[in-house]
Length: 359
Image (cartoon, rainbow, N blue to C red; front, side, top):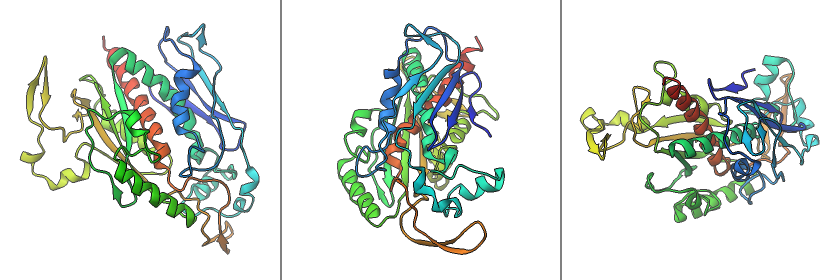
């Protein structure tokens, strides 16, 4: 199983949704970085379940423990072990689903691939696996911020057919994003999104959405053509997240409806460097950062596990009616915001270290 990501800053995640715990091992973190649990906990708190009526009621504090790689508050340059213990497991909720694969869930494919699976909560296919990524990504964010001044902010830009108006990617901040339950920084759109999610929850259904992310102050030169382009690594990181179904950077698919003369980002002097007037390229040219903000969007599908009764089939092919039990988000996108941010940080720190290694 592919559970590792990165080249110089490598992260390996472990654990199942209803096992003892989940976490990550970070190999390649530079020595001498001031690091404690509080540096990591902020993003885990934003990701954790039970934050509001819009999320799963599973109650987990998701308190991180640093097991290794840090002494007297400083990183040693050795592997950093991170653990979050599961406290509110309810594997009994999944008894019926041990013989019935949930529609549009990984139950079927895991069973076919391995001949066995963790039936409780989906095991590794559960979004709980992202805890390890978030914890490791929080360390990456700290390095990026302190060494290069990189700022990463994500927000919910759409839930279902409700789209938020465009925000200024140069000014948007995490406090603005966190001011609403849906993590949409546009109050009126956020209100409508919240109402829609509650409607869907009442109907025991689910709904998807879009998370937009901006990475500011990314220096020119990050990205490794041809196969490890910046946007290619971002796409890999984002599409490896649970429930993701789409990725676009800069103008994305909308750019296909523009002429080259409209789409081209014309160069202009910006202080001591060359910049661009527009940013249809999303901060990347030829797979290499160009000094402009890196802007991309990630599409999340509706959660597969719903309480609404559905006609399907069990593993033997017999027709069944399934009304899934367990505790699940009616919409994942509000909690996906810190996951997208930290996943982006894992991409950027690895490419930053690779560029730095060039001397």
